[in-house]
Image (cartoon, rainbow, N blue to C red; front, side):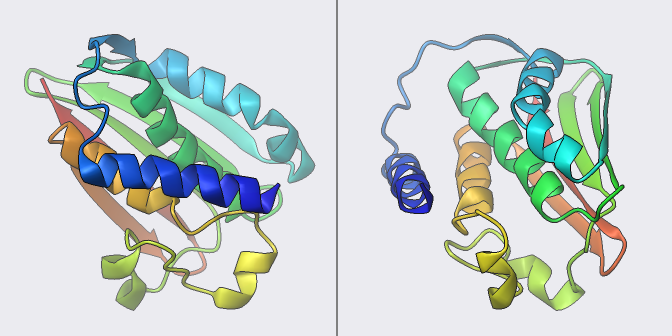
Length: 173
């Protein structure tokens, strides 16, 4: 399963890097609906760690829903995998005249400041020993970064080691 996941992620990233699938049918994508779908898919893992997951706010962007699902799934999956038992995941969606943003925050293990600039590199793992404990491929944030580039969205990552991480993606209207 891990090998299959790795191959799938590598193919997605390769297509994004080559600019394939750029000519897609854009539609109105409801971020809250996608976040709800993603958290429902992750509900088993969320329950296993006794996490509390909430979604607040709403916003709609013009995009290809499959790519936005991949983006939100990668952010929420990281929030689950790197969270502490009995922790929290908060998804906040905000919209103003210029942007629609989605912020995924967790109360997990956090990331030391010196690692933040490299987080979106392919296969970069902060803690190599932790990679065997989680089922990640090391490609999730690289995929997120490329989807952000595709939609000219701003990606921001903030973290406090031992306290948690927040990742925000802001889409221009």
